[in-house]
Image 1 (cartoon, rainbow, N blue to C red):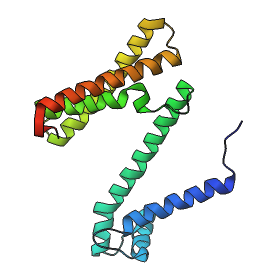
Image 2 (image 1 turned 135 degrees about the vertical axis):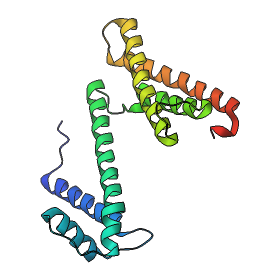
Image 3 (image 1 turned 180 degrees about the vertical axis):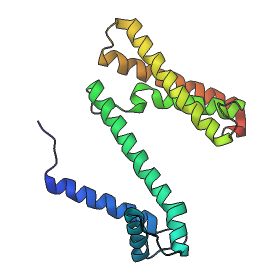
Length: 184
């Protein structure tokens, strides 16, 4: 069966995305009028110079980068989730199914508990360590699945991912119980 939306569904979702994007730029600790926001965005898209106002500074320096970051992050997460579901042929597959989320959490907890990381920055270090441990956990899961049946079948990958997720969660609990307030 085909699960495609009709054209009006895509148009409606696009309009809702645009409305949420504009709303995220307009609403904040300083509420900005929609007209000022649209004027600033139009001038940015056409290459014209927007009037130098407080709203322009807030939009261009704070809210627009944050809104674009949120939109692109959401798009990347949905694309990676769809790819994972397609590759595993399982509509319920996600990062926690394969143990990737638990592997990332384990890396972040170890980074916080023992104070090590990949860079000098405190928060960037934890994030990079979590990404590296997520990738390494995926490699471990795929290596175990390959060693188990030499075919990388979907069911083997999912079962080993669930087992790895439980193992990583137990290690997280162990580290948190011994590390105390530093990790919490």
